[in-house]
Image (cartoon, rainbow, N blue to C red; front, side, top):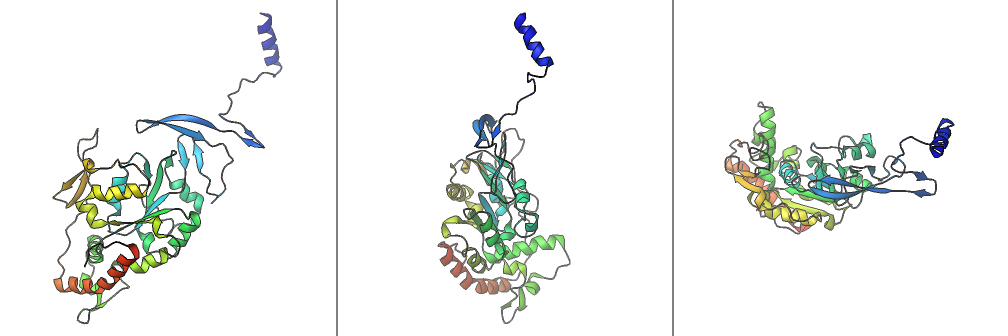
Length: 325
């Protein structure tokens, strides 16, 4: 009783501390940290709670809580539009060690003035051993993007999904036509003069396919070892094989395999098999696999002739023959 009386006496004088203590304390000369176990994807992971001060904009220090860290992406799918980037991202998201932004960020081409803190906050939280990613296909054709990404992190891994530039251009046109039925014909837009074969390289659908030209700028900032060039065609007929290359490049275990895919004959591309707890398989949206308008074989041939030397240069730059010619 005497001990209890003494305790209450001290509390009445304000000497005892009944408030909840924080999970860490920061000392001027030493930062304490603490680990916490978190269950994610059926795996018990250890999370280190970083107790350092709030990072300053562009400091590169991850923003932390007990559900993981907000980091700059370790890998970015930088291109190309209508090459198969959405399919690749969806396939990657099956992997338990990949966390990806759903929508295209467009930070390095449209929203760069918002600052690096804004960009990092777009990223999903990741645990140690996981990879944060985003995909914005227009980065590949944005002249400022290579330098901006380099300034953020010179170790960023870059994935480029490419396909035959002629079929890519037709697919690009088809998408635009679906939104704007009054669009001029593909032939009118692609050529300044069809009889002479003079291609209009200012038209974006043609310009995007100048892969060697765009890659030349990127290679001024990043070494070949930080690029992976994914075949959009192979991603359709052998998704598991191409995913092996992607997972190896990212340093991931090969967990996305042929057991995850089946070929949808109606759409003409692979879909993901029915996930557990789902009533049906997962395919890409209605806009994927839409039929292309008829385009004259003469127009196609002239475009192929135009791209052929450019494709060969691209093969030399990447060390890969994509078999488009």
